[in-house]
Amino acid sequence: MNAQVVPLRRGFCGETAAPVPRALLDQLHDLLQLDQIAGVSAVRTLFVASDTAKARLARHLSPADSVLALNAPAIAVIGFDFLFAISLVVSASPVANPDCALAIRTAQRSATLQGATLRLAAGAVGLEATAIANFDAAGLRTEFFGGTEATVVALCRLAPQRL
Image 1 (cartoon, rainbow, N blue to C red):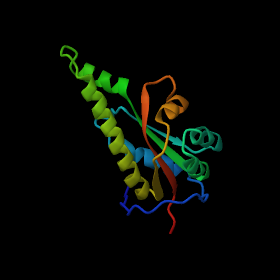
Image 2: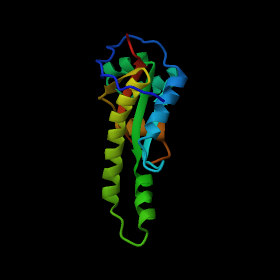
Image 3: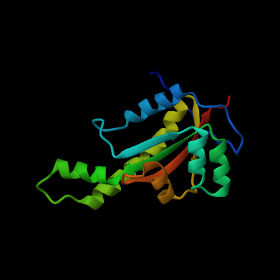
């Protein structure tokens, strides 16, 4: 894929934008996979695009950000699975005493960097990406990653670029 990095623009302020085609989300997902080492990562990225899923997400946001979420064409939920991160450390050195705290910090750092990568990759496939800052991470974890040990670190609103 021949992708260009485009400057990040100021995002939408509440208006409803055109839908994001599934093909663009698939391209974005493929670009994010290039950021992994040997295809293994504790980072978890979920694209929320249906009205039902956006309503579930909006319950865990500030009132102003709830409006942004409900009007967003799609939202990326970025997190990391800390048990998976620990299992990677343990499998790498099963005899040594693994530094679980280091594994968790590294996974969190990777997920945070994945959020930055997502914003750049979104521009490369024709999407604007705007961070959503005010959210209840514990509530989102239960809502979207229930049954796992994934923790949400970032949300990003995705919309087609305005020309």
